[in-house]
Image (cartoon, rainbow, N blue to C red; front, side, top):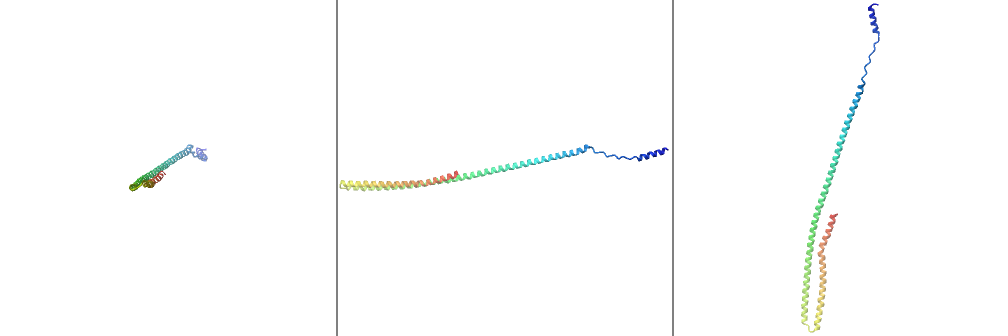
Length: 208
């Protein structure tokens, strides 16, 4: 066999040998593990950020609600204080006005009572003067009668009649004066008594 033939035979055997396909290289396991880990870390960071935002949002909302409630309470408290102060001022103003009217009424009642007393005493004085004048006239007439008597019997009779008449006049005048004084006392006290009743009613109204 020649060299040329041997070379052809080798080439034929070589071409007849089957070709084995190369398998592709498997991806590195480390790459498969790193991708989910990175995604998980990012998800955790995102969740943490979301939770933090929610916490901040809730804190802000709570602070706003607290501030609003506090402002409403303060406003309500000041409003209540203003209403109470206004009511107290109105009550005090009304009290001063009522006391002024009450004092004015008391003064007017005292003046009216004094006027009644003055008129009553004037009337009593006039009646006393009239009684004294009548008594003097009767006594003068009796003395003249005594000068004209003719006997002791007539003298004692006239004296007895005069004494009895003077006593009766004195009793009658005293009774009349007593009634007049009692009536005058009631008339003098009436304005003051009425004002005392009104004052008591007003004091009860103030205290209520």
